[in-house]
Every structure is written in C-alpha cells, then in structure tokens.
Length: 141
View: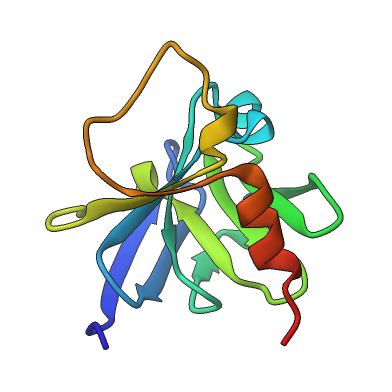
C-alpha cells in the first residue's frame, strides 16, 4: 500500500482553496470529449476519494454533467476545480491547482479512443477506452 500524500492548492483568483489526502502521487488523464470541451484539453486529475476539504465553498458552482458525475468550478474566476462521482463522492482534483506536484507521475489515460490526433503524451501509461472506463463505473459486486 502506498503512503498517503497531503496536497493543497487554490483556484486562479484564490477564492477557493482545498486540502486533500491522496493514496499516491499519481495523475490520471481523461480524453473524453466532454472533459476536453470543459477545459479545452484533456482533464488531468489527482484522485482524492472523499478526503477533499474546501474553503470558500460559497464560490464553488457545480454542474451536473451526467447521471453519475458533476464538475466544480470557481464562480469568480472560472477555474476548473474537480470532477466528482455523485454516488460515492469520489473526487478528482484538477492537477493544475495542486501547489506542489513534485514526484507525481502520470499513470493512466482514459477514453483513449476519444483522444484527438493533435496531441499525445510520451509517458507510457495504462490506457482504457471509454467503454472500459464506463464498465468500471457500472460494475457491481
């Protein structure tokens, strides 16, 4: 088991800040069309489970983007803050907001079949198609 890592950060204007604990120094990337439309590029996240604590919550707007997920952003500056699974509350914080990314590595890319041709990453990562990712969300024990 990987030792938990504390992270912190804030949005562009500082109206929203957060602290969280993540299980590892891993960054995931989503190439899904909706994620790219949201931020004009792939969504890079640090998975924090339910450990995220926000300050300035009154400045957070939440958009319900699907049956299972929602996206948070700062209502003052527009910074993308998080993607959250509604049922579990599991939250992926936007990697660009984290104060110190020293030692983090990109480990996975999802919706690789939705990735446009105009960019690619050199890192060798685990890759899942959109269907494989959706299957993980809907899998019931």
